[in-house]
Image (tube, rainbow, N blue to C red; front, side):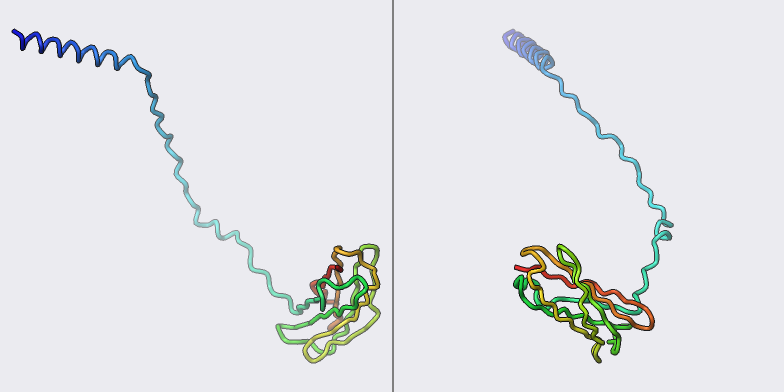
Length: 156
């Protein structure tokens, strides 16, 4: 009889524990929503534009000093190429763009056998310290004007 009452008490206690545990907070489990399927249309590459052609003539300009004295003298260099080969005999012109106005460099160099020209530029305090200035250089070749990437400098 003792075993039976011990069994009944254990069953009652277990029932009580299960009932009490059911009274605790409930936890809601959110199921993730199904993600849409991505489909890639294979014809999307047909709209890509063609790679642009390289220009027949290319040129660039640069300064002998990137941070000259405000009253210093610098040289502006430029080079003209045609299909990566130097273009000799092309006349060039340059304009310096300062903070308060432009200055046409009245030198008229002609490109040498390497396609190079140079301009001497006396700054004479025309550009404020720590303010960038640019110089546009262009060449006349085959009746066309070819503009170079500009040279730049910032007086210190």
